[in-house]
Amino acid sequence: MAQRCEICGKGPMTGNTISHAHNLNKRRWLPNLKKVRAMVDGRPRTIKVCTRCLRSGKVVKAPRL
Image (cartoon, rainbow, N blue to C red; front, side):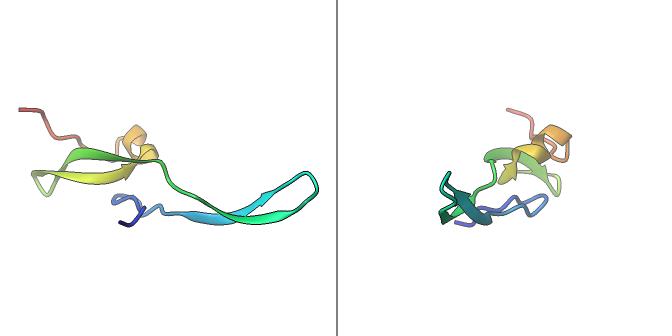
């Protein structure tokens, strides 16, 4: 399962954790994704969206029935 936002395409980022002694360890930062029922092409569908897209209003949530 891909950790990628279906609206903006935000995905995992890589980098290093750096200790006080400046030892480096590889690590990944994952985006904060939520499963949301949203309107896609006029139909409700469950998509994975990052919280920044939810907050900025790029996603139109589907009405509950």
